[in-house]
Image (cartoon, rainbow, N blue to C red; front, side, top):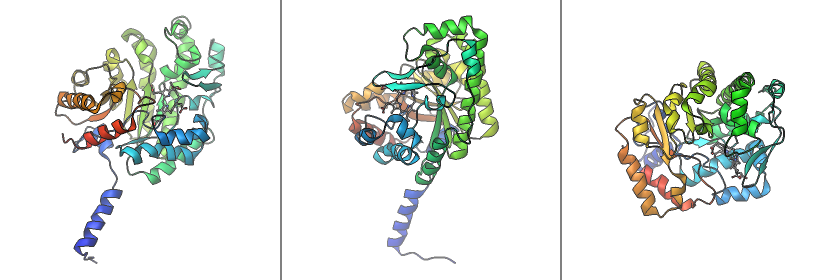
Length: 361
Ligand code: CP3
């Protein structure tokens, strides 16, 4: 039966469809399909720069937020509701899946994760358990299920890459020289590879679990991998990332985003990992990087996160320069070149997202 709608009800109806229709702009760009404009989201887009996040944080620790699905979903939705990003990222932290592996850590204010039982020997690596995803990390699965119902944009699942997780596990926390990590890698090489293998395996399983729970794309954060040279990356890291991405691809069909900070010298090898999208850090010339990768992957990035502290006119100039530098190729995802920083003015985020939304390719 055809339902005849009056002009008024018809426009209301269309408005409702437009509001509820699923926005797949991000997924299309990941697959290098044509989009009306580049999708926009920001790494670590839910966080302390948001007043509403700080309010929720007063009553919940970071770990509480990750482990309480309703609160996790609420926090994940904050930046979508406030700024209208084209993708969400489930609120969690790269350290969260290390707890069930037997790693004991805490977050130190202003420092980051600190590990109480760092890895020192092959025996420590042997002792590391695996994940039982029926029981372990169930809360992330429940959060993603809620988000799938609530969102009309895709939600990314994520993990820390094996190298970045290993760096915390070996150094015990953040480091400048990464001497403990590198000496373990160079002198206890078999134990290093076993550690990387175990982490790659567990993190692949965890990402697959996130996809089964509702994540429509996944991101692997290799935040500290830029401290390696190309030779070490190829020898000590790349085989494990390749294996990890291959096993995700075997069991899911979602796009894989791979990001590393200070990684311009590693981009061609990161591309060889099999990822669909390469995250470009803020120091890199993104257009040149994309060209060097022959446009065979999508790219995500890459404004300097501290630029958001500048006046709007400079933010706009730099955002425009980035857009103007990008070639007419599908697969450009607008993002920052690292996570958004605490104290970033919320109005600048709003203005920048609106500006991107006003751009056609
Ligand atoms: O909205 C989102 O993007 C999801 C949230 C998210 C968090 N951590 C929450 C968090 C994501 C994607 C991460 C990833 C993460 N965690 C990375 C990779 C990304 C990157 O920035 O390179 C890394 C290296 C970590 C480890 C970590 N956890 C650090 C360095 C810190 C910051 C410490 C500090 O005090 O500045 C954390 C803690 C953390 N994880 C916070 C948040 C919002 C801040 C702590 C808080 O709210 O109390």
